[in-house]
Length: 230
Image (cartoon, rainbow, N blue to C red; front, side, top):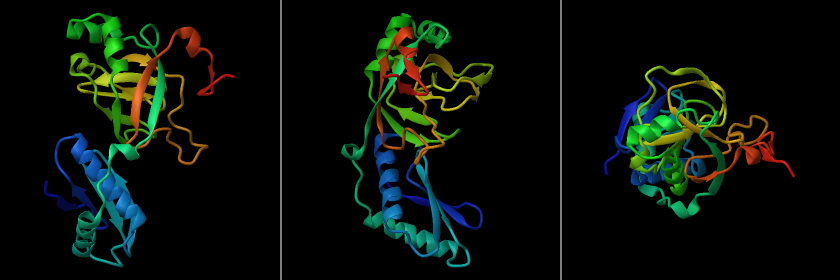
């Protein structure tokens, strides 16, 4: 798959591996990001991996755009392939439905299945964190079963509680902080996904493998400050 380069202002470039979010593209994004982190070139300031791209910021007083693109192209030819074996496995407890998942019924009706089947399908899949974005710590997850896909809400909610698990199209994600949003909410996790007092501050990172574990409201209540109360 060819890689393309485009300028991003006068001090950054975007290396694009494709137009669709899939496993092969994601692994190439991870491989380039890991290589540049381990082997930064003179003048490189920062890299920002996304779903299908890697943005590379550089000092224009040190090298020109063409030189930066050449350096990144060289990194592409030298990078080691990323594999899922290098990723972490993370389990996220979720209380589905009720006040925590007010749109569970809509997702079920939209797909012609029972709410319990939505929960079973959502919790049976293994997801991949393709990127962290939109809000600090918010994971964009791939791998959701097509049978529970659902459109965004016609009218976004002005505030969604942190920990809310939502569906939008073929994606699922977890709201890491209170924020407006239009995803269909099917549950909520007591875990904190954004921990500004920690380093790194995001519970999840690109490449992680995620599974959701259904829990009851009583179990949800045993969590304190995003951690299980011992």
